[in-house]
Amino acid sequence: MREESIRLATRGSSLALRQAGEIEAALEERRHDVDLVEVETEGDRITDERIADLGRTGAFVRALDERVLEGDVDAAVHSMKDVPTEMPEDLVVAAVPRRASAGDALVTPDGTAFDDLPEGAVVGTSSMRRGAQIRAHRPDLEVAGLRGNVDTRVEKLLATHLQAEHEARQEAEETYQAERERAETAEGEDPEEGEREYEETVESWFDSLTELEKRALGREVDTEYDAIVLARAGLERSGLAHGVNLVDLPTGEFVPAPGQGALAVTAREGTEVAEAIQSALDHPRSRVETTVERIVLEALGGGCIAPIGVHAFLQGEVVRTDVQVYSADGTSAVTETRELDLDDYAREARELAADLADAGGATLIAEATGE
Picture 1 (tube, rainbow, N blue to C red):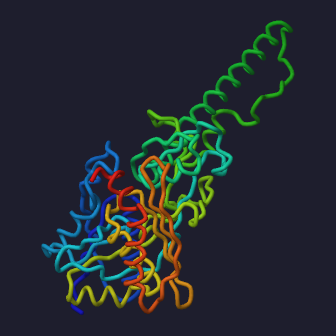
Picture 2 (spheres, one colour):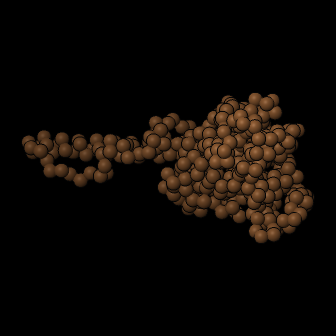
Picture 3 (cartoon, helix red, strand yellow):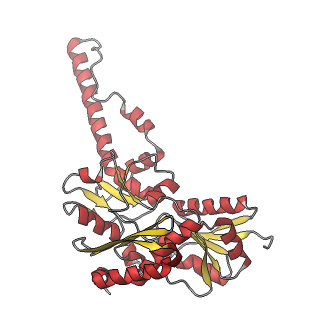
């Protein structure tokens, strides 16, 4: 291994930098020096379109991997679910670090569970898969588009609710003060302290808010969301999992995107850097599970934008694999749960995908993606 630092490309979003920071720390523990290099991607530049409108796949990936192949950097850190199944020649996933939670979480202002959301509630998501799953389980809910990094999405959820509470507190305070003034004028002396509707003053309430809540309070939004759905891992890596009201969605019912919760470190094939990264970071179980998921996704087609959920879980000598393929509106689905032999999981994963395609999955994907 050479003595120079490993130049590690990353997107510049707060979540991407946190993820790259995890990789940086793990490599430094193995006595490798690391230099992080921020790279802007197409997905970062176009902020007002849905993910599905940015292109088939790779909106957040290609720019980083191009820098790797050109030799400007040694490796790149990605969210595995963003990585296309078709890799450029000479590029490999050098490491799949230990995976975080693979599931989705429902975030609401008050911790309401999915089944308890009121009829007509607006649920925000940028994912075709999540939208289809929400419609399939609760056709009475409204699904609305939602873009931005994790912090921004949470702020958009909280904005109108905090603004409404702020307005209510201000009105209550104004009413309280007006009543005191009338009493003082009528009696000619200071009235007794009346009962406030809110124990805290508006100023005290504002000071008690987190920085994220304060930013949300000042945000202008076009859509009032009652809930949003995000990857649990993204909330954890952004440091928000303990600061918001969330309810985990069961992975058996809301099957997550292939590779969700996992990171991928790409590098040029056969290089010393690739070997060093693999040795330092690769987690065998996470590698097997995400490989199964990506094989199924690749065999089904549609890329990372299609309404496909695949979740593999290694149990002893088998890989339990749940797959859901939905129509975009959630009214039709092809689903399967199968245990794959660990010694032959690649072949059996392809067979599983072929069976799902024949059962109607291929048609649903083609209709959803317009291909």
